[in-house]
Length: 109
Image 1 (cartoon, rainbow, N blue to C red):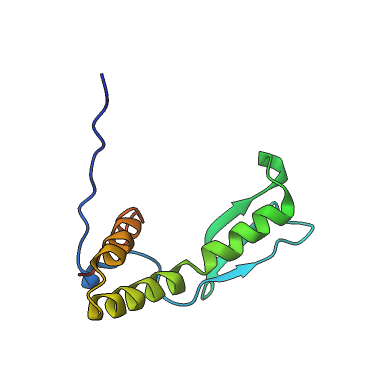
Image 2: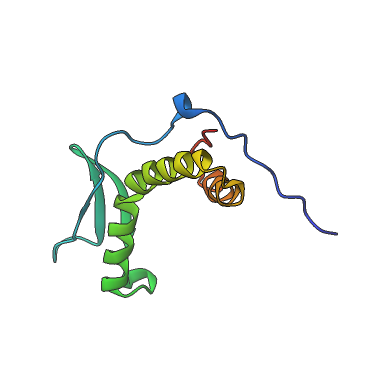
């Protein structure tokens, strides 16, 4: 029997539920066990490496990618608006599909 996938309700742009502000990747020092994603003076996300079987440079690249997520999300919305303007529904639908999988990020159309 196949399990049905539970769908997540996607809200509007006023319902953002992620840490506001710039996200900054901070490389771990020799005395730390993980890289950090900081927002202001808070360490929001911890990215672990070798202790969990991930190469240190791979985990650092993962941390940088995570830190860029809010900016990428904004760019996706901008791209979607421009594609909508040119009536490119196929691309808009692909962006909607991508964005709907971003847990906690609303779809804005």
